[in-house]
Length: 242
Image (cartoon, rainbow, N blue to C red; front, side):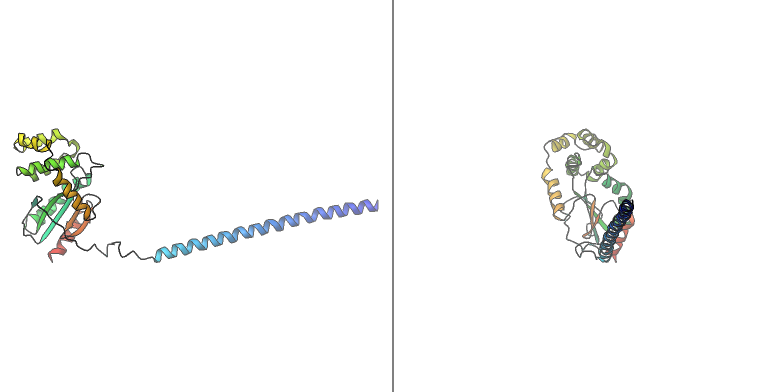
């Protein structure tokens, strides 16, 4: 009986020791997990600190570092205002672009009133049709050139931007009739795509300047991208007038 009691005691002691090993193993693994988490957090903090201290690339313009002016040709494209005005504004635009429509509606009238009509600025329109997303951009640009052939570019320009939702050959012919153009001459012009190379030349020139979207506007060679508020253009023009 004593021997059996001893066996039971040994067995009982053995069973009591086993949980200690499991507990030690669990605590050891738990410690390792927390160490890994701490290391990962440290790495994340180092990355955040590095990025916060990073300076913008010299080639990336910021608000405090405006783009340097570039030489922008007005070519022989239509313009408004005094040919010898101290400020030249060149717009590269797409007749079907909604942002160009917004610039025409909200910003250009103020620029015209305050700077073009007062002889302070000349405004030049150049074509930059984004044909891949605006299928009527190129036909509209060519039609406007045909209207320019008869001395009605700006009137046709305005009609297009006021009717962007209905652009198409039928509309161009109706607009030409409303403006009193010679319809036969106008239709022949758009059918033969007389100004296809002219429109493409504008696009190629704009691409060479780094233009990728519309409207892109240069004020004495300083680039402004997008339908920015009037105040942005006002500030840029006033800076050139000083």
